Length: 405
Image (cartoon, rainbow, N blue to C red; front, side, top):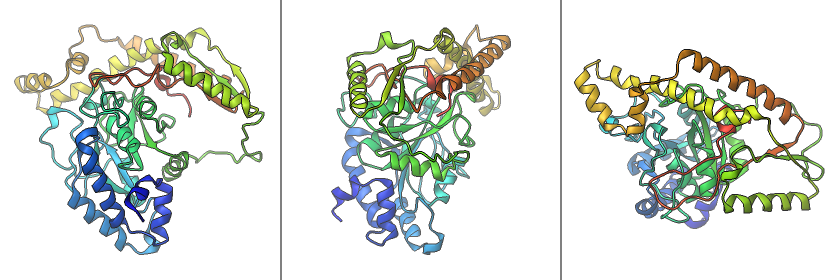
């Protein structure tokens, strides 16, 4: 098969091609390496990928007996550089931070990477992330549709690599909008499962309450494949009536940030309404009650409290040596150092109140969501912004309260 065609195939199609013997994992890997080499100087999606290691991994997968091949056998996956990775290739985990610039391979995979590897995935490399996946400050990674524009963040490289056909699927994480936003900016599908359904063991943590693992792909079928691999459908009740757009009840929820929506979001919003109306869907505009407008305030409290805990670990990593601690903090972006140095961190009472309020929102949301077949809400306030200094703005509501997907 022509390399250009091979790159365009989805993960589902690649898996079938390998399964039927129409290509090998090694042939596929060589095609991807050529694409990455060609595009890396402009897109900068990868922070670590080792060609020899990729080929070694591919040959090992080709050598596996058919009865030992998993549901992702031979499918290439990009891994955000906050997940621990071991393996046959040089693949350190450095969290996008100078503090870890000399770190080597981890002794074990993070839980999510271990699941991908057990399913037969070809771990292509580590993708660019903002520092500790915790800042809105951009990296050198660019938007493949226009290198002058941001790819979003913090899962910048994971989204850009998929959008640029350097890899069919990739793994990212989200604390605020770090999956949804880059998915929108790069024009691909982004899936943030319900919080807690995928283990964050071995992932660089920012907020225990908000950190969620998710995925990027160019097709919904690939996201469904990943959902099955991670057993996210464990409590799905079979529907005797398959979903159909005609007569489906679809809610349009602008949220309290609609005033900040730009022309790109407005245009996409109206186009979606027109397309759905033309197919016979029943559309309803839904205004959420006032407490939903306060979720951003509660999220800030949670992030301030849990971010402080996360970055205090820097002190522990240098054996409480204050001089070394200060040196490490100086390598952090000021927005991250402020989590530790914040003179007015949230009190325990404020944290508990925020946790309880967010929990109540989930229950209120369930009462709204159960009335509809689907709900549409903005993922970002506008198109990808020009410049790489910032990762842009999301539509900060559903990702913050980690509502059910």
